[in-house]
Length: 329
Ligand code: NDP
Image 1 (cartoon, rainbow, N blue to C red):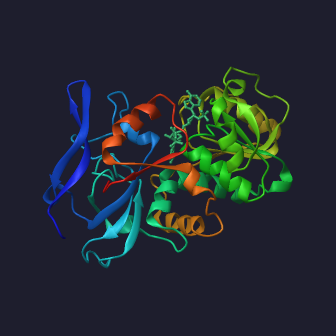
Image 2: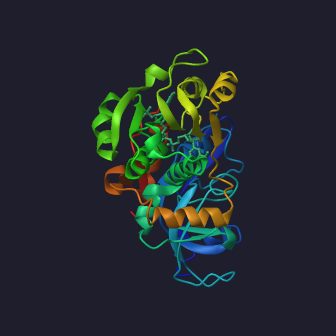
Image 3: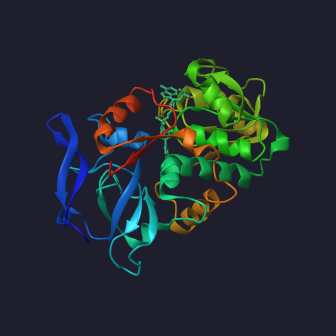
């Protein structure tokens, strides 16, 4: 390794508060693993949870948050060659082990995804955990048998990280996409990503009946709560909802009616513990047939010093698209 010190964005619990800022660390403070010169990271909803006192996500303090990273292996280690371009996300990163908001990281070899052909390190982080989760959701709907001929598909939380990529991927695959958003100003952005229609977030935000007239053949839901209950009530016969998020709440106030009267399936999506072989296979598709278009429009570049403000914006539900971190900036 070239230097032993590096810059990192760190969160430290002090009493009931969390102090955040950019500090200098020494490589000796990193856990065991393959050394990686991080080039790009990205800011996710979970990073906001890991950096706020009520989030209950971080398991160690101090912690370098950042559930996403893309970089270059700095030294031969554990069978991985120096110079290999890699992606790492999920598992314990940024939760109980230092993550990607730093110039250096160490990651177990069996958590590493080789950068797929068709993607740059920066593009991989515009996609990041959020885009990977969107891709897992699309694959779940595909495996359920959903195809564009079945009818329109809804995406909730559409202007966020998972939602933006989901809109884009579904549109690329030929689906007619309805995008639900709480941000009227995001309509043009969502249409540019491929949304055919916009559904106001509020239209799905109030308690509804267990079954409503069917509107969509399937859905990708990043919101949970009452929204997911309302989505389930409006899925057509035999359709499916891939559920990954909880920005609208962790409860699911629904009944069994959509499941037992319409054969609707609720498909759980988890990116954190996705087995490494499936992870590598889905990333290979993200560099190929599932490569999102318009990655430049989705990604906004920031530096380590800007992370704190973005975490606050995420907590306020005010983020559009993806914030990619140029850790060397
Ligand atoms: P973002 O913060 O980028 O986007 C979340 C979006 O949700 C917002 O942009 C907004 O979209 C919508 N939203 C925000 N607050 C509310 C609210 N109170 N009610 C309804 N909608 C709201 O987050 P991500 O896209 O990164 O993550 C989305 C969710 O998915 C999170 O809950 C996250 O924890 C989860 N997640 C789960 C993963 C898994 O492995 N299961 C992996 C990655 C994320 P709009 O204004 O368009 O409505």
